[in-house]
Length: 337
Image 1: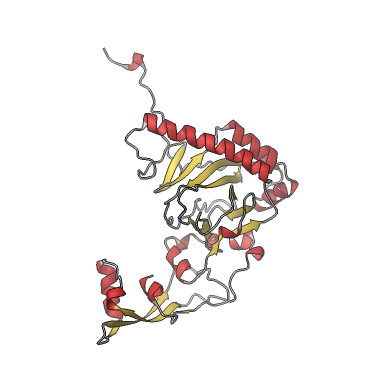
Image 2: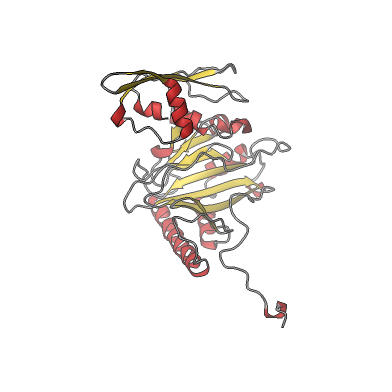
């Protein structure tokens, strides 16, 4: 990453239309930097690698590095096609992500959701301050059954028991015939009675940094086909400042690419969800690799409605904790006197 950031347009990204499984050259770089401006990371492994790449130290203290980066993986990588991605042509089955630009929610409907979501956030954070005083919101790592910290200043508040939000999802989203048809097709269900959903709000406060690459769902080898898809509906127009979600198209097809999100970045094999506006939708497969991007605004919280539609047998057990924010009170009858 340091070489890429400091290159003088000499980086060659090699991407194939069809990956045969042979080792793939990800980049080739010849980098010239002024030693005083190099800002080389103070990390032993990085320094050792860069020292191996150093081919010349010029008299005027200009350093010249040369390197090639190749990759082999346990499975064929889903790399960016020549010509790049066309967001409007991405499909959930093939690419693990699909944009829906005709509004999922109208502006008044989004505003109604926002009022409910903000109240839920306020009440939940108040409970944390009251019952978990050791936690510093925005800094501490925690995972309760109601809410998790997904990183500094980044939260995921589950609203499974929140009747008002559940009703809004049913009335405004699940009532749409197009969405019903999509869900039944993707989840291989004969009727909506076979489909359940969980709703939450993912919010990133000003100062939140880039999130690590991750996938939300497990691979169940005894289950056939897609068992869950997720819908993101931004509650504001997304920008580079507010941040957005970045996806790795095609990454839902294999569990063998775990930990290779950096490869997706280096090969530019990513798609940015910044193209979605308030009330529009981003559908993604529950096993598609993705990450939330930084919120660099001074006072705007990025609020995103998240709905996981799933086959009725699936119960989410891993993305939240098991303990409630409010500790269980010891009953008087249980105390030995």
